[in-house]
Image (tube, rainbow, N blue to C red):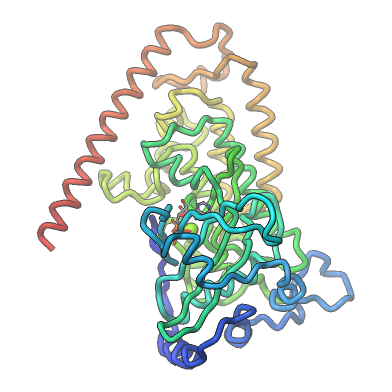
Length: 441
Ligand SMILES: Nc1ncnc2c1ncn2[C@@H]1O[C@H](COP(=O)(O)OP(=O)(O)OP(=O)(O)O)[C@@H](O)[C@H]1O
Ligand SMILES: [Mg+2]
C-alpha cells in the first residue's frame, strides 16, 4: 500500500471547515459541492473541451455533476453499517490513504432481485483534504462513464454528533488490483497477454478522461494499486480523489498543490506544480515498466542501485542485448521479446523528460494495439517466443523455428525456482526487520 503524499496543505482552512460543517446534525441528500467550487477553478467558463470549436458554453464538473447526480444512490449510514456488520474486520478487503475498504452486499435499488456485491470505502481521516478527495471522487465518478473506469454506485455523507461520515459505494471488483497480481507472490503470475490487455484497457481509460469527454480530466494518481481488475481481468481505474479538470482555454497547465504517489508522479509536476495530462502519461510509463519487470517503482528492500525502478532500468535499454534481464522472472520466459522491447520503447517515450515529448494517451492506445497484434501474430497458438538469459538482439533477428526446447524449459523452470527462493528469502528478511522494528518501538 503506497501512501499518498501532499506537499502543500491548507490545514487551517480544513479545521475551520469541518468545525462549521459538523455543527449541523443532518443526513445530506447530495455531496457538499460548494466548498470545492470555491477552492478550485471550476468556473466552467473558457474550459478546454473536446469540441473546443463548439460555440455552446462549455461546462465544468459541477455543472455536469448536477445533471447526472440523480444516477447515484444516497445510502444511509445505518444501511452501510449493517451491510458490513458494523464495519467488521471480517469484511475488510483493503486499506489505502483514504480509509478502509469493505466487501458487502446491498439491496437492489428497487428492492427486488438478488443483492448486489459492492466495495464500500470509508473515509478515516478528518480534514479538508479527505473531504475534498471524497467530493472529487463523487463528482468525477458521477460524471464519467467508461468500461475501464470503476462504477460508483452511490455514497453516504452524514454529519452527526459523533462526527462526520463520508463513504463511497462502488461496484465490486473481484480480482483485486494490478498491484496485487504483479507484486504479491500469493497470486499466480499474470500471463503476458493479460498484462498487455490490462495496459491497453488502462490506457483507454486515461485516453477517455483526457480526450473524449466534454471536459478534460487529469487523473493524477495513476498507479498499479488504482487499476482494479474485474472477473475477466479487465482493468478499471479507481480513486478519483485527486482528479482535476484540465486547464482553461489559453492555458497550458493547471497550477496545483503537488499531490500524488511517490515513484509515480512526473518530475516536472513535482518541481513546478504545473499539472497537465502529460503528468498522467509519465505515470503510465512507470506502470508499463512495473508490468514488464514485476518490480515496484520504489523498493526499499533491494540493493541501493536497484531501489528506484526508473534508475535501475536505464542500464538495460530496450534495444540492447541486456534488455531481457529486466523482465519479470515470474513470466518464466513466456512472452514475446520483440513485443516487450516495443513496450519498453513506448514506456521510455512516456517517460520523456520534457512533457511535450511524451505521447498523448490516444497515441499510446494506438501503439499498444499494434504491439498486441504483432505479439499475437508472432506467437502461433500453443507456441511461445523463447527467451533465455543469453537473449540478444542478434538471436532475435534469426527467427526460432523449433519452438521451446526441453533444455530451455528446464533451465527456465530452474531459474524461476531460484528466483522464488530469493524472493521468499528477502520477504522473510523484510518481515523479520518489521518484527524487530515493532519490538524496539
Ligand atoms: N471497487 C473495489 N472492488 C474491490 N476491491 C476494491 C475496490 N476498491 C478498492 N478495493 C481494494 O481495496 C484496496 C485499497 O484501495 P485504496 O484505493 O483505498 O488504496 P490504495 O489504492 O491501495 O492506496 P492509495 O490510498 O494510495 O490509493 C485496493 O487495492 C483493492 O484491493
Ligand atoms: Mg487506490
